[in-house]
Length: 229
Length: 242
Image (cartoon, rainbow over all chains, first blue to last red; front, side, top):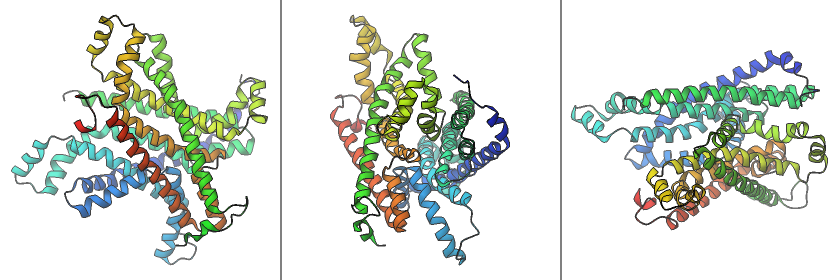
């Protein structure tokens, strides 16, 4: 089946491919951090008893969760340079690269998904904990920061990481705006050398190994955390 | 903001840009619904296999789920479209490359269907596993065979339990259908980008596309909630119970 395949093309392009992989991983880690921070803020807003806070947050989350990621990437690829032009007054908006457009798009998109995870996590902390914190004289902010969120995050670690694996797979979609992540690098070489079969199968294999190992680690982590509860 | 752009005659094809949007919506719906038929059928079979006692049945289903879940959809899309015709037997490959009708469309449907099947399988499995063991034993004690227990006891209950997660899987396949633009299916997102390239009315065009996606999501959510209430088993779970 593999006769006539040129596996040397992979060896030849490894440096380029690993640069792409670094891009993918960097984008994943940065937008995961940004997504979790913003997601926490959104989750706290959604849980707040004030309409001014929870209505906009709910609207934002529902809007982004019903829009395809590709469309969101297109949106920000178009909006970010426009906004930068306004802000900097620079007619060509040279200061901002496509990487940042992608980063902003992924952060804002993932924040909607992280928000829902974190909201569920916060709601899974027993109510008595909140009452106990207030009874001790903690303010709302202190109770959240010192009592509720630490417990909520401990329960959520596996789900947050699983979402991170999904995010890593989703970063391959920056292909649609021509960025060179791992998949972008693979497809550029595939088209340059006319070696689509080898490159795409190789890309699939690498993604599979990384994501499979990562989900295995997350599963182990989950088992360990669920002990003692 | 100038939405009159949609009533201007389109760059090619005779109609207006509104016709492009409508045709995009049509392809989005076609790809997602046909893909969903595959995903639901294959996913149900795989989900059932994953709950059986026999390793010969369970292992292949587990392997399938792991492989399809851990490779990004975009990569799978390219494999269906670019790689598959090269590695299947010669005659079939040649047919796929030259005679297959609408190869982009059908490959996108198959790709989305088999990708989503792995996710549906997980939902079906967890639905079946959430039913108390006693129900299976009761079924077997009444003289039902194993397949009959699935057919009459486990699946009717399991499907009802997983209506909410299945709804979000359907919404996922519908959003994921936009990945089909990478192999040249002119669905809604692709049409939006194309119109914005011809007219430079990017803001208006993307707004309309986003609104359409949100409307379809809302419709599906409302419809599924109604279905959930309708098939609810009295005195059991359901939207009223939560």
